[in-house]
Image 1 (cartoon, rainbow, N blue to C red):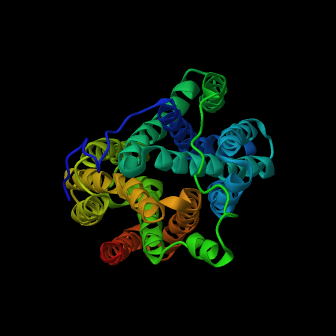
Image 2: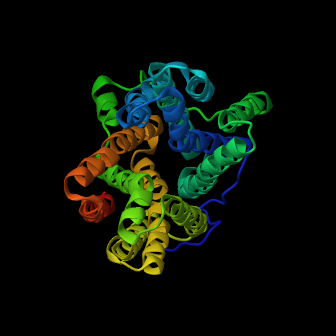
Image 3: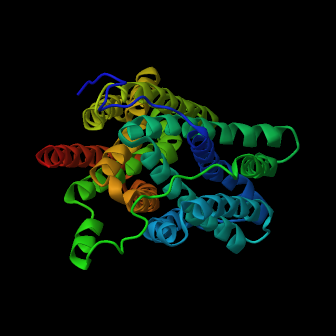
Length: 398
């Protein structure tokens, strides 16, 4: 529902130093996460890895995110968000260094897992900190931060290719970002990270404390939306080039280049979403985003015409763009007093989706071909719409 900005119920959105730090750190995370895929061909060649072993890197990163999703809220409750925030960023840098310099696959896989686990800790504290700092304006903070993250993800393959072409080597594309984190640490280390208000639960009685610590049913419905949304995004991003090559006859280079349309649409969609969240509620925008996916995906999936398929890819990207940040905002809103736990469980949903969805689609493609295997996406979309409608109804009743 539209509302006007700047009223008593909808405070003006203000970006302070922590907000800019959080945006930058999310871009840092997204860059290194996105760099894994383009770095794999070089690792395969240098370490003589099979496709199966190469695939372990993505699985390790996803498993690391699952671990952080199960433990980050407890770590933040015990030690506070600030040390977890900086340790998470440092751990991701260490994982990237291990990935670039290790000469055995067991250590490069470990590096990917470290990036997922400690990078996930960074994301959990970052998201919960933004939520507590901006309150009712958290949807704007989440969509804006994801615009910056998308730009970081877009930059990763470009810089890897540029450094490799310049004979400096692909490793410098990762090391530059590690150096960037070091600069950010010394520049922003004194910035206060918002701490959760309910840091101690000893003041409440046992029964009321247990009741307060249970996440509401509305959250778990939104958890399901996050799972389906991330699964769709990774099915498109991970296998999209292979699908375009198979269905439209594009060359591998052309198909990879075509996927920049999808990632570019995500940047555009998140920028538009960050503006629209100032006027419209998250759940209404979420349903609109799902509708866009429903409009665009059939053209991408079923059209033999390259221009129509690329147009469908663009519209699908516009819709996919805001599924995660809008659902995250809605999920935190229904349990804002448990921002750390909500953020951790959302990270868990994303990790499980990243771990399962590309592998399931790939296994189906081996059996029935990638065209039919992509039928997984409409199933995920239908599930996302159904669960979103259920969640919206439950939230309105509440």
